[in-house]
Image 1 (cartoon, rainbow, N blue to C red):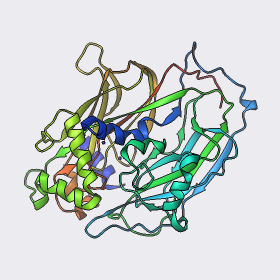
Image 2 (image 1 turned 180 degrees about the vertical axis):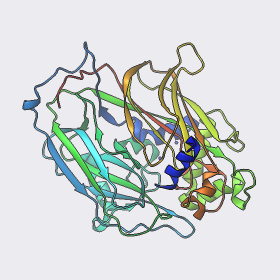
Image 3 (image 1 turned 30 degrees about the vertical axis):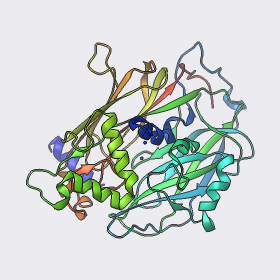
Image 4 (image 1 turned 180 degrees about the horizontal axis):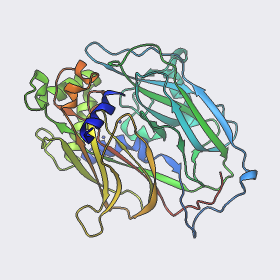
Length: 397
């Protein structure tokens, strides 16, 4: 069987700066300002090792209220947030987490940490404990752009992701009183049955010595035309983008335009094709020790490269055979040293013919594919976790 045919059979089976950068970076802040911790084999400034027998690991299981996804008329996607209480009495670190989807409708999910100071605000939206609609938000309803970082990122789930076991000596800060916002993207092209999702986290006391890690995001806006021979009213980019605004609100268009401008393109007439790329400056110095790719169902390949086009170029992550149903975060075998301001380029390639071949996508009308929250839209997102120094891989959690 040809490689291309194998790929297709697997596929059949189976998230703004006041100026341009302000809109984008304000939006990205929901993740990039999150405080996480990670580690790697090293010496010098690494966290000291501790005896495994002296560390008490606590397992916390959180279950969302039963929810039946529903989409607005003419749309096929629903984003819903649930507020979950881990009942933390002591400051802790998360060393492992895993999202368990309750149904095939779960397209992907974001898990956010809600500081105690914002719990009361979130509870206002959580009427009757049933959660709230949260398209494109960090979690809190109507959260201003400049405050979006107030809900730090815990992890992201997509099909195939599995458990997030952080490397030895690593963890994510979890202060006492913190709550969790579970944001789930439901794809109603798959179904609309009631769903109950679950999150399991393992924690250790905050007295455990761990090193902080900063998460950087690299975005590029897809501009994928309808394939040759495929026609329709939404095969026009302007019409397709306007449709996005009708589905998810004007901010959806603002976000796309901001990414285009930040990448040096004309937002009203960007270059179109099956591949998109953009270069963002690294925001902090240290070592990239973990990376992840995210696209949707048309995704074919992904690459994240530091200092592209120079003798110092280094490939951080290369996924030549991207599969939406098998997405993971990777701990790098060899951490990549970075300096704040260095260029980090993300490149994504798509196969638009899958829009007519995949049974799920055939349910939607042909359209010019842009960045969007919908299952039939696309994303090009690279995640890279950076530690200021090389943590001690022998430290026990």
